[in-house]
Image (tube, rainbow, N blue to C red):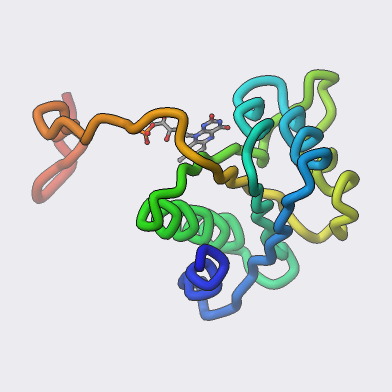
Length: 150
Ligand SMILES: Cc1cc2nc3c(=O)[nH]c(=O)nc-3n(C[C@H](O)[C@H](O)[C@H](O)COP(=O)(O)O)c2cc1C
């Protein structure tokens, strides 16, 4: 159902610039968990990781397409009661200072024209989050009519 949902995600000019690598092999997931210095370790222990790619030859909006696709999967997962988290790959570096995107391309045999935007990890939730407290909404980020400088 998560993969079905992602294939319904909208794309700029209907170009479907994304592609996805679905990884269930825990050994490979463990290697994805070290694709960058900080913030990828949660992947170790996920039952499923989906690597979200964008074909840079197909669309100049591949980042937007891949971002929306990532969130579509997270929303579908939430609807199913499955936990998920976004691991940012684009613009990140490994512990050794190597480009995270290239590390993931090498690991999964991904052709060079594909940008690696994110890895969405899925699994059983460790804990249930508290519902969002509406009293903490950042209304100052919203400008009515025109931008209000502070
Ligand atoms: C573009 C983007 C990149 C993110 N990258 C990471 C990441 O690399 N590692 C991580 O643990 N969480 C990552 N997250 C999750 C955010 O840290 C998380 O959404 C934020 O802390 C707020 O948590 P909440 O949405 O559960 O309130 C990312 C989220 C977004 C939208």
